[in-house]
Image (cartoon, rainbow, N blue to C red; front, side, top):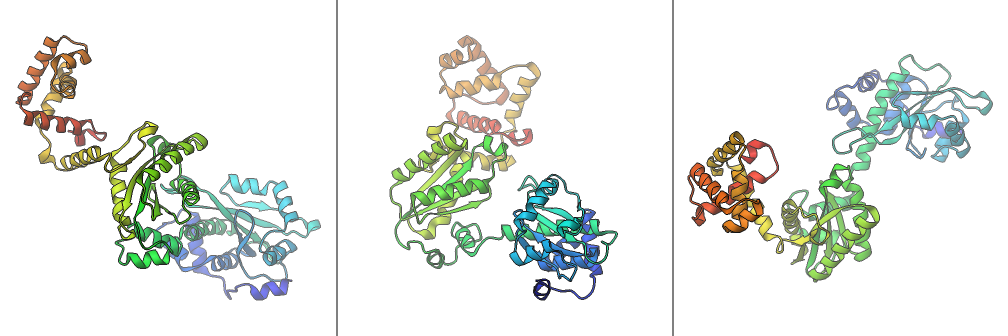
Length: 448
């Protein structure tokens, strides 16, 4: 068995000194975008395994979290039974894995980033090993370092080299990048779906993409966009996991549905679907079920009907406009369309334009806010309530719980400070827009 393995293993004739330098730099927190990234881009897991063996001494296997062998270095006559059986069977023998688990090796790999020293057990024909866990690189998107596997270094005919532990730490960092890239690499189908939704540039030939995905080529469709409620984003709910759940539910509803995750949103395409009412009912029911059974709070926007699949990207842009501008909290209004939410959408986009151009922001409002601050007054609240009550002084005074004459005095002060006439419809409209801009969340300079 040993000779058979030696024939199938990759070999490198000489120790790789440059490789040792790269592995060492990663273990010391080297420049991710520099040397380490270059090495990670130039090699695969088999080459990495051989690089470790050449520079740390011994024989290497790289395994996934379930102890399936992903890659290995060349072996010689010093390979023990555990290594030979693991490589030939492509996974660790069950009885040996039970022993390693009993010795606490897997617990230590899960709980620590350090190299674990597993002593030899001559009675079991197990030689000494050094092992280190492989973790997904931590970044803003993952929010943590998930265990992706482990690197096992078996001692051969000679002791490990003095810097073997440091070499393993560097190798684990590179392996984490290599495995993460493989896991994250989209399939051809996923790339086509993203192209259909307009996430990878314009759709040059929508018909070709639709044919490649085996979707109906004629008839209207529906596009649904799902977004996590603010509270779900705060608890760290993963859009990818949400996308998986929605894909299963959508496929159960329509076998030809297409689902993709773009950023922090999930989009579902229902080809050949004409009834906006039926789509809305299914979407609302789905959101209610996910909240009840999975404690997952979502909101959704629907574009239906979409005339043809060449307009899917436009439909996605439409649902994004709705999701960007609607933040309803009640279950009955979590599902909407552009037609239903057009006022909120257009007002929000108008405020975006005003907020982005300082020359459209009325400096007179600052004087009113400054007056309130200096005098502990409430002129802004008073005029906002007055405008909300459509200029009815008595209703506004009742809402503020003040005498109507008190409110009239405050409104005169507002007119004096702003230089506006609240009986003028144009002044009232401008003031409402400026106050609405100020109410938006964001830094003070953006609101003012």
